[in-house]
Length: 421
Image (cartoon, rainbow, N blue to C red; front, side):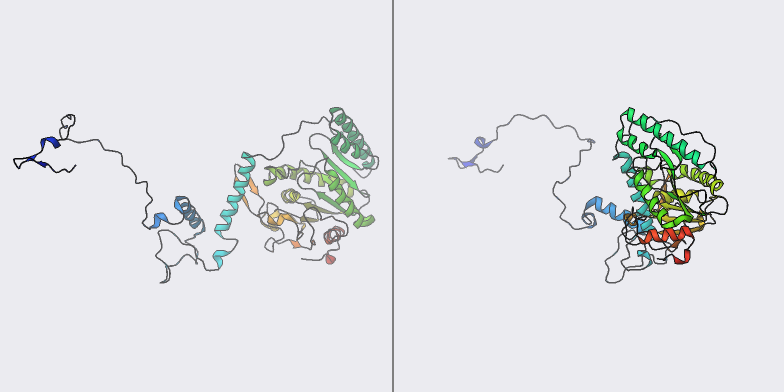
């Protein structure tokens, strides 16, 4: 504090009146090493420009470095080059090449990593945040009828036994209070139904015959996709009926609900697990079917949606002359040759099918395979691609549609009339 002393009569400055009054302080500690003090940060933002203030902060910098690392490929002939005079000095690390070229192709490393990341995120979200309903209580039902493998001579007896089993399942479901399942089972037990097999337990399984199987020389086996159960069976059955109408007296159609299909909103629909379980069942069924129709009959597998994954797994060693993939998310194989089958391989997809937005990739995750690999309608896959019109994912068997007409031609062996895509 600065002050000016007053002058006295003697002309000298009187400083006593201006001496500050304070308490005595303790003597200073002797000099020596002191403990380090905490460094305080200046709360004001740093106004100086620099690389630490760019790219939107630490998160943006890390995100940018991650994307750059995923995109860069030092072995590529189009790796980033030295900057020209018009570019600013590069920071350490690779740079994105803005020029169009092979680095922008969908098959590049960046796109593959992005697809794997999205698939992993989708599975994680499905596990951490379940969106499906709680498991429904088990519905009581009798065990399937114990029957010998069918032959042409025993078909009628098999139909009758399986109808009786469905009627018993309907009574048990009604007593349990599940009127929806009881109605579905009761419909299966109608006298006009030809059930080659029936199992009312769990989601339910059934194989229904349309046409004269004992005398048909052209036989189609339909393999359904996700969310096909006894309760939703009618939509699957409608497609089989529509195809049977197109085939005429030569053909027979079998609706094969011989496996537990995955739910559309579930983690199982993203993996091959259900298909791995279903494939040996489908191969065994085709072998038994040969005992009914004989060796001369022409067998065609018509596989829809997740059913194409089942057929892809069942293809090696299967007794089919043609395998058709429609609305496929992928078969689990990289190409038609990788299916290891002597059957002709066909594929189609409607222009309005939402399956076009599903990434055709696969990756091992948590001990299973997520995704189903190559697109069967892509030229590189090697299938015979035919037209399916502008219908959606569930409309391939729509009466009067281009896809149904082509499916019937394949089953009947009129392959020269199939309209190719």
